[in-house]
Image (tube, rainbow, N blue to C red; front, side, top):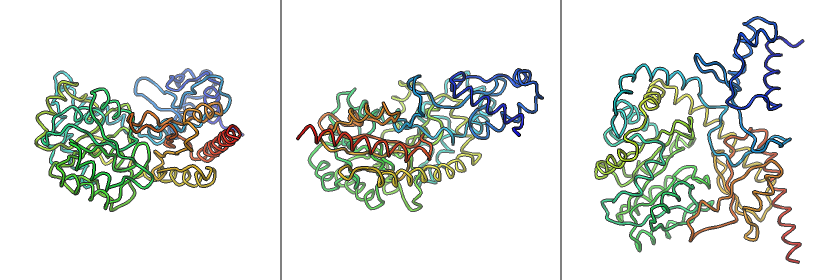
Length: 453
C-alpha cells in the first residue's frame, strides 16, 4: 500500500510530467499541501525531504521549495529529450544545498564589504585559499599572482587584448576550440594561426614550425578534456610544448578548466614545467560547480599584473564579493574536494558508457575523439555529410547534438564535425541516444550513396 508521503511525491512528479509544474517553479507550501491532501504536516515534510535528497527539488530559506529539472525545447515533444548539446555540469550532482549554506555565511561574513568597492583582483582571503587549493593540481603560485575573475572566459578575453613582453601580436590556437574564445579573437580583428587537434593530439613538429616562422604572442591550449574534442595531453606532450615556448619566446595560456576531473594521479599541468610566468594558468569553477556563479582564477606573471589589473577594473571594477566569499568558505571547509571526488566517478562512468556506445553503434567510416571525461567528444563525419543536416534530422527524433562549425577559425573551418557532451544525459539514456545517432548517420550515408549512383 502506498504511503501518504509517497502519494504526495508521485502527485508532484505527475504535475511535472503533465507540464503543470515547470522547472524553477515554486511548489505549494507545506501547510497548503497538507490541507489539499488532508494529512499531517509531517507527511509533506517527509515527501519534500525525500525529493530534495534525490535532487528533484531544492529549498530556499524563507522562500519555500522549487522544482529542479530541464526544459523541453518544444512543448509538443512526446518522448523524452536526449540532450547531447548542453555542456553544463550534471545538475543532479551539483551541491545546491552546500553552496547555499556557504552563500548565507558569506552574506554574514562580508556584509560590510557589500557597501564598498572591493579589490579588482579579488578578495585577499580567497586568493590565499585559491593558492592552497591550486597546489592540489600541482600549480604553486603566491596569492599575489592570482586574480579572481568572472569565469575563466573573462581572463581569456582580457589577455587577448593585452600587449605581452615578447612584443608579438599573433595568437596560435587549437582547431577546433570553444566558441567564446573564437569570438574574443574575431571581435578584435586579431590574426590567429590554427593548429589541428585530432584524436591523437596536435603535431608538435607543426607547432614548432609555427612558433619559429610566425610572431606568436601566445599559444592558447585546453590541456585537459579539450573543448570540443575531449583530448588530454600526456605529460611528455605538455613538457615538449613548454620547451618549444621557451625556445621561441612564446607564452602559453593554459586553460585547465576541468583539471579537477582528471583521474590520472601523475598528470601535471603545463604550468608545473615552467611556473616562472611563461605559462599563464586559468581555471574555471563553472563546469564543476554552478555555471551561474561565473567564478574563475588566473595565475599571472609579474610582468602582466599591472596591465591585467587595470583592464579588469575597466571591465567590471571587481567580481561580486558575496560569490567570492561563498567560494572561499566552500574551499576552506573541504566541501569542494569531497564534491570533486564524487564528480570524478560520475563523469568517468559516463565516459565508459559513451565509449562503449561509440564502438557499438557508430559506422566504421566515421571517427571520434575524446569520451574519457564524459564531458566532450567530437565525431567527424564523411566529408559529403554536413553536420547541420545531421543536427536537424536528429532533432526530429528528440536527440540534440552540436554542430561544431562555429568552433573553427574561418581559414580552418570544417562543416562535418559534431560535438557531444553527456554531462547532462542520464547514464541509461546515453546508449539509446548514440544508437539513434549511429542509425541516422548510416541513413544519411545510404541516401548520399543513392544520390551519387
